[in-house]
Image (cartoon, rainbow, N blue to C red):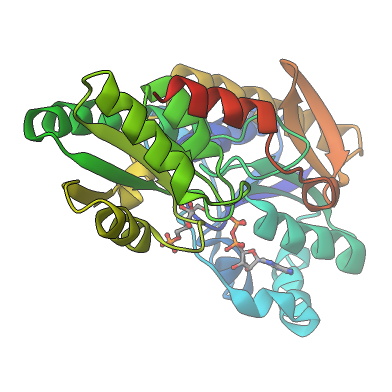
Length: 323
Ligand code: ADP
Ligand code: F6P
């Protein structure tokens, strides 16, 4: 009988609970023991590990957040800290770990595998969509829906007041939330860290919109843009004092709420696949993702070694439709 552990790490994302449920139920179905580690690598180090029951994963598929809680533990970069944490798995006979998180969390899983021989599978749980080896991360589409809903609401008030609203969205250094939200939400311009920032490009959109009698704008700014949203607002006002510019930062609201059907299905497919890999002894530091609708497996390091910059064409489409 196998003993496996599950943890969630880094920023929480909608669908993490769905993934926990899929892993736990699949493993329990096979008769395995399943352990939950609270607060990611912090709980692994502090021995906050418990044996999960079917009741623990009942009625959680549609819940935001993570029942296992999450945390960041920068000290996990230290091999001595990882050795202490790994000991807490080994003493229970746990030899396999499913880590649900972003590429930082994948690094932790990578080292546990190469240094301590623990079978590790990474599932991409982050709203940022900043992991190579998967077209989409668990949580990304739910966050995107929250952002496009906010864009619609901001458009209502921007139009009433003839305003330019800059809406700052999350994503860390990845502009995927901003770019996709601009297109799906019909916003009027997008500024992302992967593309050079040119205030003239935004001014040109605003100018053309005014020419067409459109007296308001909602522009999406990714938090990773180094100039910062407030500074961009200041520059816009300085260059055109007639503009009434406001900034709205969406913040952590983007990480909450019930996962969409897409995220639930993605989390479930990847969760089931993780257990199947462990069963076949093919979980030697690997990650799971979805590419062209199919579940795929890569080595964990693929996630950070192959991260690509944005598709220039997609960005150009966003800007063209912004007018
Ligand atoms: P995410 O997993 O969403 O990218 P973080 O980058 O904050 O989030 O990483 C989550 C946790 O993963 C960190 O707090 C740390 O415990 C662990 N981690 C991150 N980078 C490394 C690394 N280079 N080596 C070992 N562990 C790491
Ligand atoms: O990685 C997910 C994310 O929400 C990023 O988009 C954001 O930069 C960061 O986490 C915020 O982290 P915290 O929850 O620590 O404020």
